[in-house]
Length: 211
Ligand code: DC
Image 1 (cartoon, helix red, strand yellow):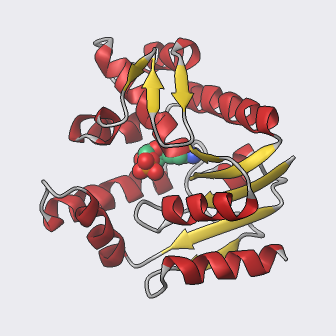
Image 2 (tube, protein in one colour):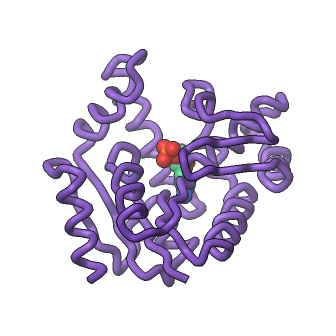
């Protein structure tokens, strides 16, 4: 099984780089952040309070998640691609991602996904540290907070830079400070600061590492 793990905070360039790498290597691509978002969406839609750990963990276990290669995300058969990026889900997702019962279910699903495909390029926060500690290559992407906030605010055109920057700082603190599988560099990760780099350059550096 060939797994390339890409971890890092929001706006570090993970998705763009992971997609490009998957294409170059002929591997499938998995966005695990979208899975945490999908569970959050499923819980909210069922009227479950994101703080109700037990009920949310049950949703993570029994909801039907489909992650298509083109980025379409289906939750219980319904297309939720747009909604999982909306403000309601974005506000609640860090609470859901801090839930150990949810993390256990996501880990199980992510490993099954990779086994079915013989590997893949998988991006998230704990892929190299927890989900696939034996990955062929672990990449940790980072960038200065203002660079990450500016990238994100270009993606969500209806929110101001200040709102996006504040939300990013809040999520960074939650993702790095949580008790279970916090965001951190794997001990042997290839660390790249992407603040001043274009996508092609980052992909090239990672490809060199694989050679
Ligand atoms: O990458 P993203 O912003 O779409 O991720 C959404 C949330 O999910 C983010 O707050 C961190 C969490 N997450 C996680 O805890 N573990 C992962 N492997 C991926 C995402």
